[in-house]
Length: 148
Image (cartoon, rainbow, N blue to C red; front, side, top):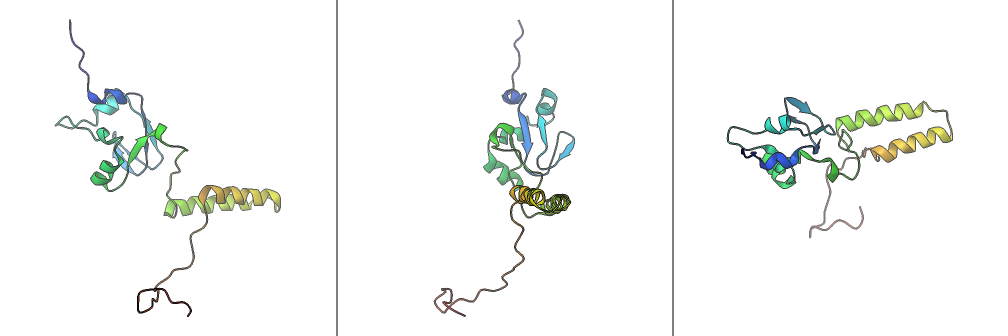
């Protein structure tokens, strides 16, 4: 009778992994929002010569931040909604938002265009502020001035 060897990572078979940041793994570079369903080959490819795997950090976002500086991946089931391939305010967000606004502006004027532009705002959020505060003047005691 031969005993079957099990590995602690075997419980991850079939788990869908969602990438929250760009990451290189499984012989691929993954972008934010990409996903992979873990199979035996993908799990084994993460095990280093010491028998350790970065997948042990799957349910520990704090350890991911300590190791890589950002929360890199999570289980798909842990997300409430699909993840966008951009972060509010980054270059990809700005590009996708402008493309969506351009497409919405092609709708006929009136309620259709208004609804399309509202859908863009609902998805992408408000545009970034065009105002930059370079300096804030405070009173002698550190409080904000009452009037200027």
